[in-house]
Length: 284
Ligand SMILES: Nc1nc2c(ncn2[C@@H]2O[C@H](COP(=O)(O)OP(=O)(O)OP(=O)(O)O)[C@@H](O)[C@H]2O)c(=O)[nH]1
Ligand SMILES: [Mg+2]
Image (tube, rainbow, N blue to C red; front, side, top):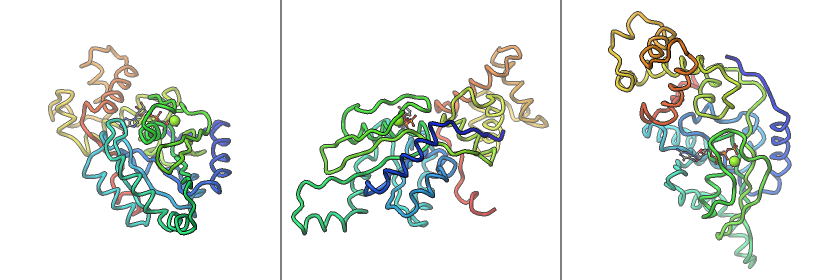
């Protein structure tokens, strides 16, 4: 599945990020902790290249904790500070505030030296759709001022939010990039919920998920669907999908079975999973 599309609003949103960049002190790049590589938008990365920025690995509650720690280290070794966050359960928020102040220590020291008391740090939050940008900003503000929702494309416009700290936050619409070359990246984005459901073929994504689980989390796959190792031997992943469809009692409704598998992965039925393995991306 090579995904190729670029809705006009995403192009507009990208230009708006570019326009605002000069006005902000720091960029908070939000990635999905389950896919810290695949959920980074290369177009946005290019735009913010010269700007101070930190990476927030959000939805850490859904990701494999060991791999989240590896990814954090990986980003830090590349020179970008990173923090893991579970915005849903409010875990890890304090570190973001600390990191923003650390990164802008010189600027803040200058304000203080010059007696500027009411300075406001301006931070722009960017990322692909549905990674939790608005949720994070609501958490920092301490109340639900930005609209959130469990589907991509909820935030339509840029919005400034004031906090009780010395920081103003800019919420932005999620942006994907024009062409997703690597089909695996497309699958992971679909599985995570970053791409609208009607754009991808659910059976392709379910087959990708089953194949990934078989390779990396076999015991959990066997356990959740009460499978025997024999069910997997000498079977293709498509055949496994057919087998599960029958087992669910969905009588050849492969789409329904596929949606259920995707949902099971999203809702942690198979436990905490990370789809991007550090190291796999830099060898090719
Ligand atoms: N499990 C989990 N869910 C989260 C977390 N943060 C946000 N969510 C959920 O993810 C969904 C998307 O959150 P939003 O804050 O609307 O995402 P967004 O990045 O602003 O999305 P767009 O505005 O569409 O670009 C919501 O259902 C949130 O409750 C988290 O840390 N863990
Ligand atoms: Mg939003």
